[in-house]
Image 1 (cartoon, rainbow, N blue to C red):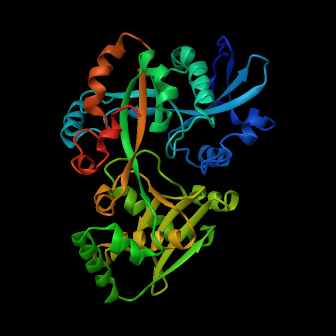
Image 2 (cartoon, helix red, strand yellow):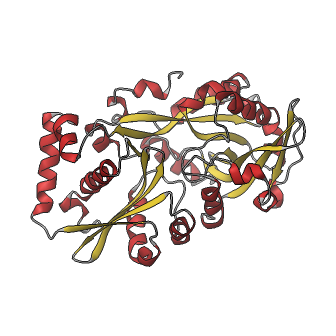
Image 3 (spheres, rainbow, N blue to C red):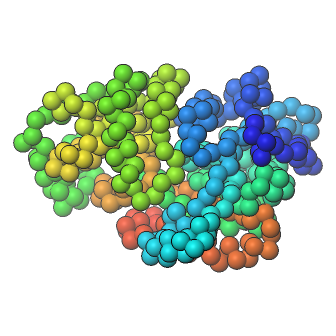
Length: 395
């Protein structure tokens, strides 16, 4: 492990927490079995650690019970975080002017608990176990952060269902703010046509049919669904970069090895949707499966045809059709791109950030500043969702 991530063991009253590198977990049952029922299981964390190396330093908290047995693993990573990444365009413009004189303005080394590629989870099936993990970690995280030269401690993008278990963080001085939420749609329909007829308003249905009709006048699109994108990655990866470069919010940046390793090591969980026009790949989507839910994670588009074909809407149609045909009951999508999801009738899936500073007096300031800097602040589309209030209300 990188030296700056080394830290002493933590000893809560009912167990202990140890900071280790992944190689130390090879024969640990808690590593083999952790997150077993989640699409982003520990195979996924291993792939992320080994292929998304642009700015992250990864480590793992191993939680042991009072008898010394390893019972849970909580991944974390360290990065140099731009605190204004999700702020409004005006705030970011002001920051750019200040950074001409002060390059490190509002950058801070941060210890993040969770996943570098997506939402975070606790290695727990129930609320009692989840609360034990949080209670075990919290007392010494600030000390660990200081030893790792991190000033901020962040529990990154934890779904709202963890709020009862994580309430002790707020009592300990953490500020909870919303991150950009995921969205989900219930697939209670026999097919996509029934969804259009019953799931959408008349105006939304007319709008979608108009978009689909535009594609009918172009060369047809052919869809292939595969477990492994390796044979096509050289053609598909630039389409992901095109979407990534257009996004105003950047965090993780996928790599070719990441995409290939997913197919090689997680074929049971991963599906790649690939659209071709006249033999050329014009779109692909990385999706993952968990229980009765399909998660639409990352998208790539060829913008030379995407806008004319309304390609994004066609990918949604085909993924929803495939999901319904294969018996999935929920479609869940990653953050951003909210307008079409609003008109599809999706609901928001809140994700929370829990933030504290290793120097406790600073938290008084953070409590007032973070709500102004958090990424959903001022997003007009999000406010139109019927459950927008859930981003901030207690579960």
